[in-house]
Amino acid sequence: MRSREYDLQFRDRAARIRTWGLILLSLAALLWIWCAVLLMMPYEADTSGKTDYRSPAHCEARLFTDRGTANHGLQEGNYCANERDWPEALAVLGASVPLSTVGVGLFTIGTVTRRMSAHGEAMRELDKLAEGRDG
Image 1: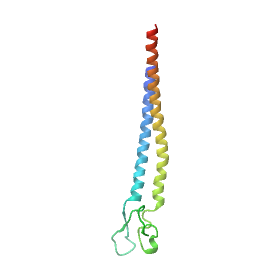
Image 2: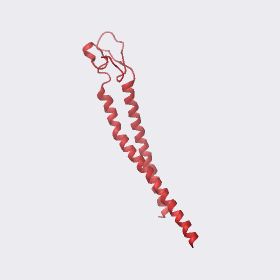
Image 3: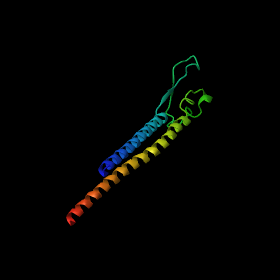
Image 4: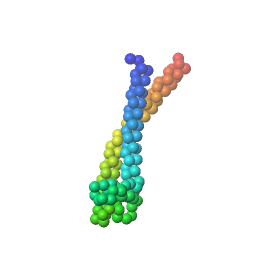
């Protein structure tokens, strides 16, 4: 195998590694968006089966509430307390941490590998030009 062919295959592998990094970072971003929706958007709690009154309870956003709708909950007869709980949002956020860590690592490795390969090729071309002038 010639060195140019090997270098092109090397760059292709680096590009695939970088692409996997971008995919993992995109998945982590989706999890961050999901966590933000869970914490910042108002929601409705299902009351069916709990009373004869079947309309959903309107609940404030979990992060922005300053009343007891999200924190005191069932003691006061509010159905919002257990609908969107903090552990669920934190689990989503926690799942994004390994994805983003591995994604950043793969993206960085792929990018640096491609740049180093291009740098090596440029140095070989400069050496060839310098040898051509000397000879």
